[in-house]
Image 1: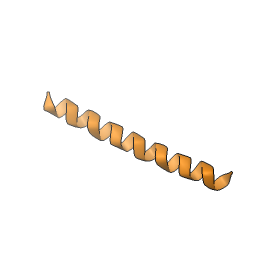
Image 2: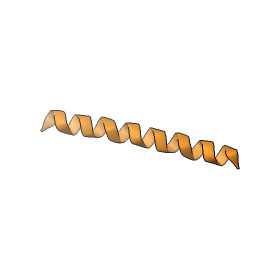
Image 3: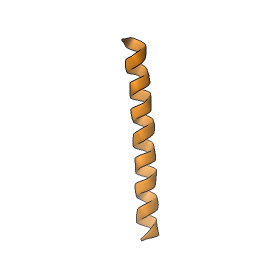
Image 4: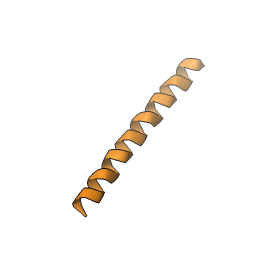
Length: 30
């Protein structure tokens, strides 16, 4: 159970960092 939670946490962290990178690129190119 904790393994699944950790996996989800990692997945969310990766997604948020990707989202941050994308928004930085968008603001740079606009």
